[in-house]
Image (tube, rainbow, N blue to C red; front, side, top):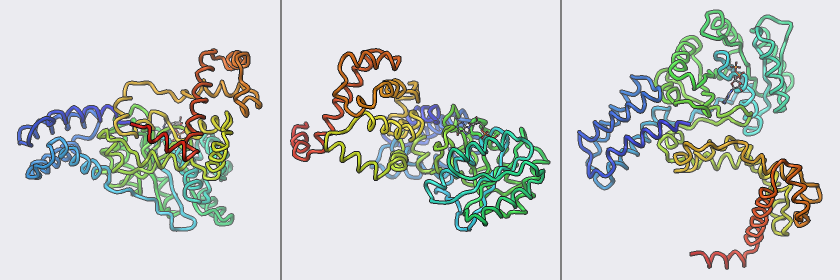
Length: 440
Ligand code: GDP
């Protein structure tokens, strides 16, 4: 996410690094580089210009503060200004009404239906809500199927009416059904088009007028750069939406849409999509995104992701097992599944300060655990529970069964053993204390 932009900004800052103070000349030069970096990231021209003019003025104005270096001062200014550019503060959904009605709009392929599923999943698992999804696309039966499949996957009911050709009526029926069944959020997935289209706009306007949604979320593909911003403008003029959802930020997006949309439509980005899985949805925090763009990582989000996957009861069980030295391959396997649920590996690494930049050109595959999983899957239940059983002949069998080789199995066994040793030590306070004392 934003690696190219981060890289270029970093280079722009170099102009100031090592300089004793901020001068008109070095700031002008740095701003030129920063503006170029923003334009390369597909930020719209006016936004980039206003942005650099603001930063320049502030940098010159604050020059009296000689206690910090020009590089540090500029990083702080950039962080503040980027945060402001992306909306300043986090914009929460308005979920007070019961049922809360949320209308989802956007062009085909933007990721509307996927987002509808992700949002329902988020509201159910993170906010304790009971959502109902409404399939309100009367043109594409495949879209209805897609929503039903997602609904099943996340355990959220979907209302569809294949007989009807009236989107307003379908939306109303969905809301009535939700009220009847005590569902407190209704998410309506509307029909899109390949491009802006008058009939589509009229249709969504009619649905909006009929159901009076509390939130209208405009979903847009961040990979489309400036087109995303232009489409947002047209939708906002017609629908006056309440928030933007930027999808596909996990891809090769240059980031321009995230940086320009707020200043063009003056509506907050509320969520970002970072993958195809139902869990790949993040609440958008302008400050955290700014520090990621500046290569400063985002530890807060990383910890939150970990907490979301963390089941206290399971963790307590695990601790008990570790204490009794009973940690086995079943536990190891389920730990891997939890890490995988936290999201795309490269994305996760990018949240660790300094690591994002380092990993820029390294391919991090989400299949990183495939070999380990295959090896564990080739073990018998007895072997998984009792790893000490796994002797050389069993290792050969496991390597064959998993399509790996004996070295890989040996490596995993060694790692597992080391891990168990460390875990055992950590669960014994006396041993832990002695280990700490030995540390340099
Ligand atoms: P719709 O036509 O707007 O309903 O779009 P869909 O929800 O069908 O999404 C179009 C394609 O984009 C599908 O292949 C999705 O899996 C994919 N997609 C949606 N959101 C994301 C995302 O955040 N990241 C990635 N990588 N793919 C996404």
